[in-house]
Image (cartoon, rainbow, N blue to C red; front, side, top):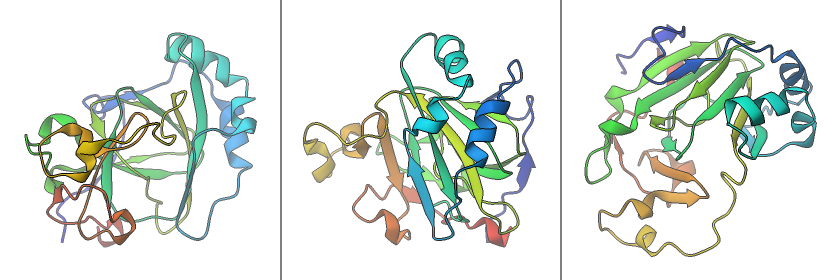
Length: 217
């Protein structure tokens, strides 16, 4: 059984993984997220949603948070208690919590030279509804988990095009060499999965140790 504990995220204990964005009021975006249905069957992710990108917070996120880079605002919502996989991007990801939710996070620096990662290094952070957090590019993350068996709804802000289908074949993904390219599964998305996660079959099974289930914590 995992020995990790769930930590209430704050500016100090979260600083190695990201930062809490407190200098802007994201009420409009949180309100738009709250109108979306929470899937009762697993997890749903949409990279770009018109109603979210129509919020007044879109301009702030574009101009200030991402320094005038084009962005997309989508969401991840549903029910989940498992780690299953960890991913990273070449950019920060902003998460907007329309419900309480837990993020299982790690550090890219702890991935070995052969792209393995020990899940005992994972940290579980609980974020309260209304929190907005920038998750740094070097932070490993994946689908949020609900709190106390409840569903979750989290806005996901990324550079435009992230998580969309790849345009070319990445040969390294089909062989056993140590090229990072074998981890890429979508644009700006590198993924390492747990061999005990059937939903991630076919992706690089580089996670070792327990496939964490927060319902057992």
